Amino acid sequence: MSKLLIKNIKGLVQADRSTLTYKKGKQMDELPIIENAFLAIEDNEILAFGTMEEWGGITDWRDLEVIDADGKYVLPTFCDSHTHAVFATTREEEFVDRIKGLSYEEIALKGGGILNSARKLQQMSEDELFEGAKERLYQLAKYGTGAFEIKSGYGLSVEGELKMLRVIKRLKETTPFAIKATFLGAHAFPTEYKSNHEGYIDLILNEMLPAIESEKLADYIDCFCERNYFSVEEMEKLLNAGQSIGLIPKVHVNQFSVMGGIASAVKFNARSVDHLEELADEDVKVLKGTNCIPTLLPGCSFFLGIPYGQARKLIENDLPVALASDFNPGSAPSGNMQFVNSLGCTKLKMTPNEAINATTINTAFAMGIEKTHGSISLGKSASIMLTSSLNSLAQIHYSFGENNVERVWVNGVEI
Ligand code: NIG
Ligand code: FE
Image 1 (spheres, rainbow, N blue to C red):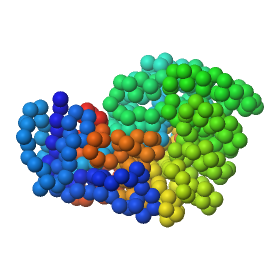
Image 2 (cartoon, rainbow, N blue to C red):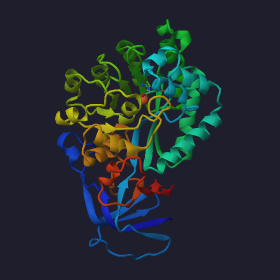
Image 3 (tube, rainbow, N blue to C red):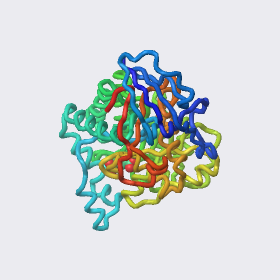
Image 4 (cartoon, helix red, strand yellow):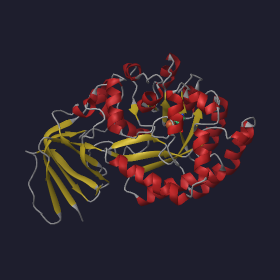
């Protein structure tokens, strides 16, 4: 048994005794913080928390580590509800092409982009992919992430997609992180199916999905619904088939254009709609009254120089906002959720409180782990971070690019 007591915490953030599963509209600016607090953890669970006055003292000192957090904050770890963390290698060559003037879409039309990553992934063994991804997750945990949704989508063949999903399954089984797997076979049409869309969709329906079902390789199904990628009609065919084997939709929509993908995803009870750099009034309307979480990816806007998602518009319309990293080698090579928090404030004009909610409780809901993650609550997973000494919580958002996190525990295990 291992026990940890953190005392004299300047602020215990997201210490939540409510039953809210996510926050929307005005609630997003409400962030429960207990000042001068303690937090007790036993093994992988949050055992007790409260003010120092409420603390009853130590009765059993055996196997107990005590940390004095004077001047420091404790938060639940970030949940990153949208990543492509399994990939072969980085793509700096495209980065340089973009600096010289090509757009992300132009590079993709030349056979770069997702297809470039798919070619590279083909050459790699499952073991190599696993080691690379595992290393990345542990690096990101140092910045405070304790949960990752991870997508396939660089395989684009039966063998390649299954290879990626098996890697994600191994990450689930062998690391302390909370991980959800999303099948994104519909990330791009492979070159050989460029003018045979139906053929590729049939391959997904008839070969990929049955294998995924029998090996239990995925929790969610995704589709890149976008001009030059998958149409709304094609997406619906895929979501329908995914749902019939128990996969919940969680989709890429409205990155470059408004095509009606949000309305369609909502119809299929999507857990989240992600990107939304482009957003029409109609999209906002169809999201109202649903539990579908609009998820913005400001790191992608930052890196590609495309518009930022309209967080204020969503919040003013009483909707929730989640912020995730989109960590991937093409459009968002950083998975640093502290930086995502900063961008939420500087570019999306969210308050620090809203950004914290958007990267903890709301992303936990967006990846379906709200019962165990996203807040400091009794019985939830001991996935927490201890900051360095900070003047205020907003220093995390203010001092962009810096790592303000000193120590991280993921499901009770110190990283
Ligand atoms: O979310 N837009 C689609 N997929 C990824 C980018 C993938 C890539 O370029 O490798 C995204 O931005
Ligand atoms: Fe993405």
